Amino acid sequence: MDFNYPYFYTQTIVNFSHLLKDDNLKMVLIKSLKFLISKKLIEVYGYVIMPNHIHLIWRMLKLNGKESPSVSFSKFTAHKFKKYLERNSPHLLENYRSDKMDRAYQFWKRDSLAIPLDKESSLIQKLDYIHDNPIKDKWSLSICPEDYKWSSAGFYLNGEDSFELTSHYKD
Image 1 (cartoon, rainbow, N blue to C red):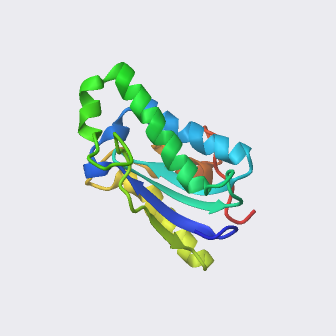
Image 2 (tube, rainbow, N blue to C red; image 1 turned 120 degrees about the vertical axis):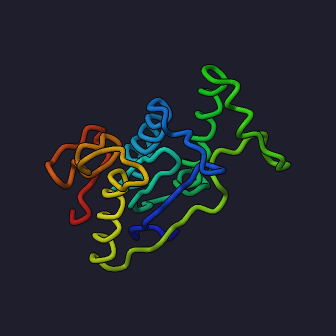
């Protein structure tokens, strides 16, 4: 991903497992994003955390040391997932054991999706898509997009940003 350019980004849990049904693990994602925002490494224009994936509309601003903020996000959250499962659900941790030489566990699928959003209309279409995700029949996590806590829909529809993550894409 290039810097200073908005992207539609999707990161998915391996085997599409519903690891992120646990609100504590959703908070790991929120805290990681808040950290990256506080360090002025990213801006988040939209997000939704689903049971097995996260969609973001974000912009990378600069490197986090020698790595991109997206790599930092993936590594940090995976580390926190492992620690959480070790303490709270060690039996689930085995579902994420990896046979790869460079890691013992893998939580995120290797190839995340990153689509550059070069037009405002494309950004709005992706924003609508992610906000509608929780109300789709497949998920039925909420009746209205703005009622789903783990999304930026409330920010855009009624000005509420309970996690203080979201910057308006027009700002």
